[in-house]
Length: 173
Image 1: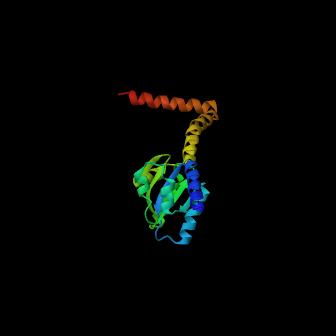
Image 2: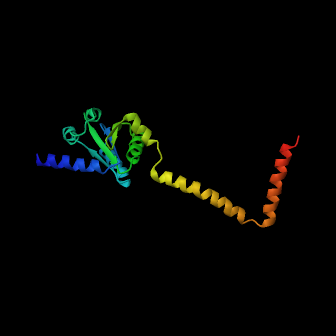
Image 3: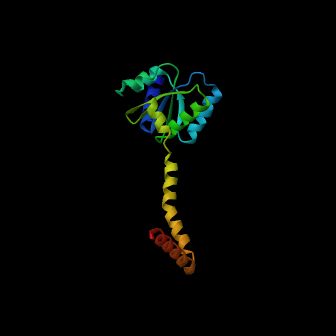
């Protein structure tokens, strides 16, 4: 009984520090496959944990969402990550390779996610991908200006004359 209370307390603490919780059925996964999944999640600061449904019901006792509680039947495992995208991406990509892992739903903060919501989240770019795109967008104009300024004046003048001539020819009847 003490171990159960400690588990419930640990799960509640874990839930407070995560960005996304994904609930899955793992029936039929081999040990090597679950180890592979755990490793992928550890790389992004997450985890994969097989749960005992009755203990999860205790841990979620304060959560008023009945749909979430209803997912904890059968062979259930939870996946979580600190950010809001990684666990969903890993779950969906793993499902594509191993059809025995089934995404049931999830949780972000106190908001329940249906299976379709988790799949949508998995299609979003990660925070690092967004940062990389933003940096590229910011750097591109600066690179173009630097490139143009590196030209000598004669080449730059010739380019401007060509553009003006093209514009004038397009206006001419």
